[in-house]
Amino acid sequence: MISRVKIAAYHKGLVFKENRYVKLLNEGTHWKKSGEDVVLCDMFKPFTPATDLNILLQNKDLADALDVITVNQQEVALVYENGQLYTILTNGKYAFWKGLVERRYDIYDMYKAFTPATDLNVLLQNKVLAGMLDVLIIKQQEVGLVYENNLLQTVLNTGKYAYWKGAVERTYSICDLAKPFQPFIDLNLLLAHKDLAERLEIISVEQEELALVYENGLIKTALPAGQYAYWKGLVKRKVVMADLSKYEITEAIDRAVLAKSELQAYLRVFNVENYEKAILYVDGTFNKELVAGTHYFWKNPAQMTLYKTDIRQAQLEINGQEILTKDKANIRLNFTVRYSNADIYKLVENKDYEKQLYVLLQLALREQISSYTLDELLDKRDDISPMVMNAVKDKAFQLGVTLLDCGIRDIILPGDVKEIMNQVLIAEKKAQANSIMRREETASTRSLLNTARLMEENEMLFKLKEMEYVEKIADKISSISVTGGDIVGQLKQIFVPAKKG
Image (cartoon, rainbow, N blue to C red; front, side, top):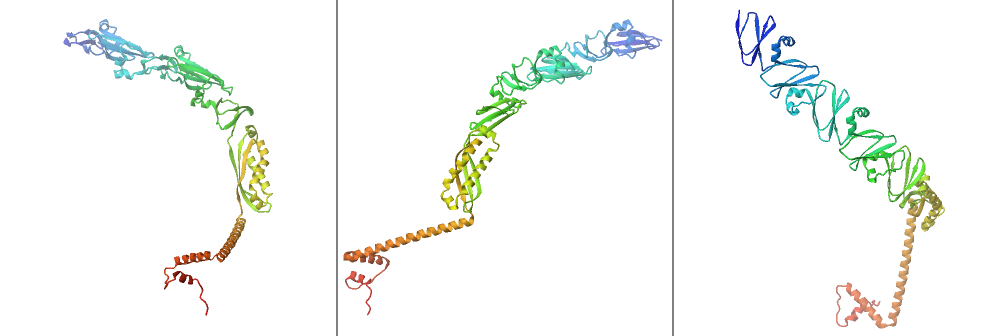
């Protein structure tokens, strides 16, 4: 039995009989025999038969009608139709119908970087393709490193790059050209890569060395023993090597650089003020005297000790010294001394020289005070200080100290002695007051006697004196009554005593 089959536009028909390919039908009306089956195929879609493609392609008419793409293991094929990405193919064999569209395909090895002929940015708009790729963007002043199975494969310059995921264990590192190169694997292994080695400046620092790295004329860092790598080209770099086996800094390094924080871990810094003297000992041996200022030395196994002393005048207080006088009076003294540190070498040789000086003054003071009675001490306190100073001066000089002056500041008496002294003082002052009063009374009596003699000899003077007393009395009386004449005479009678009958 024969039946009619119509093949629509842009379609193909595959005739099978008993599951075996017979022929290919193009657009139009066709007749099929009994037992034949026709499979319709859309020419705009990939050819995906139920029968094995390799078997079908043994038929020339079908093979001529198809574009066949074979994608091997670890490969990816990008299929373009009319210049646009159509699909992405992985491992396998694929077939597309010829004739309707302009088709091309590119096959890429997944072990290699993805370097398409088409613009990468346009292709990455395809989400499927973007999900299959690692995309690296290397900016200006950067370098990209691509590692495969922990081995460096490629060095990337500025740009955008893509690598297929999954083919190999691949890691990426983006390095800033302004910073040191600090790889996560051994530097010597990486330097076997010629491209990388040409881009790097290697600084090798030996034991007992320190590398001072300057960039564009400014100190950047200090590097101890080891191997370091920096990128070439971006900055002007200079390296100064310092010998740490010597504690003296003999290299041409500016003092402003030595003061930088980057070097502090490798330096010994000694500060000497302008009011100080300082001497330096190295490994227990005198080395030199240091003048005022800041002094820098390299840190190394040498033991360095700086001894400093303040050369300004200083004051030592000896307070509350309880001492027995010659007459067994228990007193307390406050004593002060001014001194200066004159010889730093002697000061270094004497441990706790201030304590030693304190004890020397204390003993000399006790010796002097104990040879005086309390009264002598109070009278001659200014004579004691020079004696104490003369007794201690030579011994102090042996300590490296020069005494300038000293003195007793306070003499503190016990409470009972103080009370007695106060009573004596009060008695002395009362006696002086009584003596003065007696002298004044005697002088007053003598003056009255002289006045009386004068008035006796001179009647006019007597009358004047009378009038003076009358005036004084009148000042103190509010009113006086007189009768008749002779007012003065009546007033005079006030002072004449009445005659006894």
